[in-house]
Amino acid sequence: MSYQVLARKWRPRDFGSLVGQEHVVRALRHALEQKRLHHAYLFTGTRGVGKTTLARILAKCLNCETGITAQPCGKCSACLEIDGGRFVDLLEVDAATNTKVDEMRQLLETAQYAPTRGRFKVYVIDEVHMLSTSAFNAMLKTLEEPPEHMKFILATTDPQKIPVTVLSRCLQFNLKQMPPAAITAHLASILEQEKVGFEAEALPVIARAAGGSMRDALSLLDQAIAHGGGRLAASGVSEMLGAIDQGYLLRLLECIAGEDPAGAVSIADEMQARSLSFDAALADLASLLLRMALAQSVPGALEDYAERERIETLAGRLDPETVQLYYQIALQGREDLPLAPDEHAGFAMTVLRMLAFCPEGTERALPKVQSKTQKADTPKPKSAAGASDWPQLVQQLPVTGAARELARNAELQRRENGVFDLVVPRAKAYLAERNYVDKLKAALDQHLGTPVRVNVSVGEVSGATAASLEAGEREARRAEAVKAVQGDGFVQDLVNMFDAKVVDSTIREKGK
Ligand SMILES: Nc1ncnc2c1ncn2[C@@H]1O[C@H](COP(=O)(O)OP(=O)(O)OP(=O)(O)O)[C@@H](O)[C@H]1O
Ligand SMILES: [Mg+2]
Ligand SMILES: [Zn+2]
Image 1 (tube, rainbow, N blue to C red):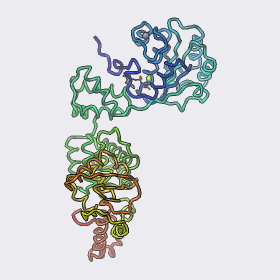
Image 2: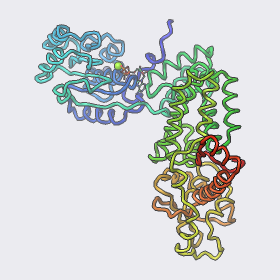
Image 3: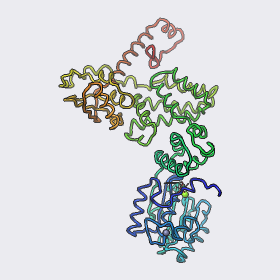
């Protein structure tokens, strides 16, 4: 038996086996059950998300011999012939190759004859945006007064190119891109049914590379199975895709956030040893930074993302301006890569550049020791424990990751009878996630040796957070360092002799 590619073999044959697109399925089921049928449907969406698949399912729903139904039987000759692509009353046209008006006219002429076998003559016009203007006009006439027995199903990746006169006569459904988690789950279920062994970590790598297209995911899966000789290992898949293990880049960003140039450079060396593509690495680094920016501004944006917690932790450690700046540096570094002595040097330089710069104004924008005065007019917590110094408590808490960032960025509003009321600023709202709050609560329980309750709200903070105190202290130390550098005799000589300039923002305290 010849091998059938997975994307074709696993084309869903009914609404139930379609992944995602629930909003579309619900509306179509409803319409079919109520027998409230429109004469023209338009499915829009990017490649491989189910447009053609849905068109065929709908054609079966309309023509199944058991009657118009949301659950075609799959056994009658109409269903079988539609699945086999040989049903006479289903006319599938690829507009990309039949753009001309004559072809459209010919096709539409057949519309006046009653269906041969089915209830309806169904015209599926794929890539409909490719039709010429005159072909659209020819179609419009039929769309305006369609014969009773005729149904149009149009599909396109590019609805902008369809004339409004056509759009307004269709019931339009926008199909969504497949989220990586849904792709991963679908691939796993197919592999199980195909009895192909796989490492679970291999699937998210494919899902990410598929860019939201289920068809692309299945094609990559085909390739990966062939590449792995019938088995799917994460390392083999990454190798095949030339994908950079996210782990490298996350560790790299952790070094950058922790101001650890030696660590960062050694990761670049490791990547070199594995002959990973530095161009791809910079592209991936930029998309990782984009995810961090999203995490900072859109709570819940990373819902489906595998490395969510690590990214959110990083997002909590850097301010939004810095993430923006790193993003720019990554893009610029990619552009400069062909000019660098070699790719490794270009990559290492880009990383060092991230470590060398801070965006203008961020340091000044950081709250200074102001928190001391602020604290004076905050009402003193009534707790007997004297535990009023939240930032100090945070330092001692046995908590890591995003929950630690939550603690560091939160301000204690009130602590009463074992209840901690915390506030985080809007920009850190994503840290107020249930899961992180629970971890923080557990750490407090453990540290204080008694169960507490933790409420986190989003709102204004005055600056009494561990994060801003640390930043204030860092800034004070840096200011000292700046003073020391400026007062240094050798530096002054350089300035005088060579008309040099000290760039204050590049001065760091020793050991950092
Ligand atoms: N929502 C989905 N659920 C499950 N499988 C899907 C889904 N969407 C696509 N697929 C898989 O991808 C293959 C191609 O899907 P389909 O032909 O419906 O894509 P399309 O949206 O029409 O794409 P194109 O714009 O490239 O024509 C299907 O055979 C199926 O295996
Ligand atoms: Mg299609
Ligand atoms: Zn049937």
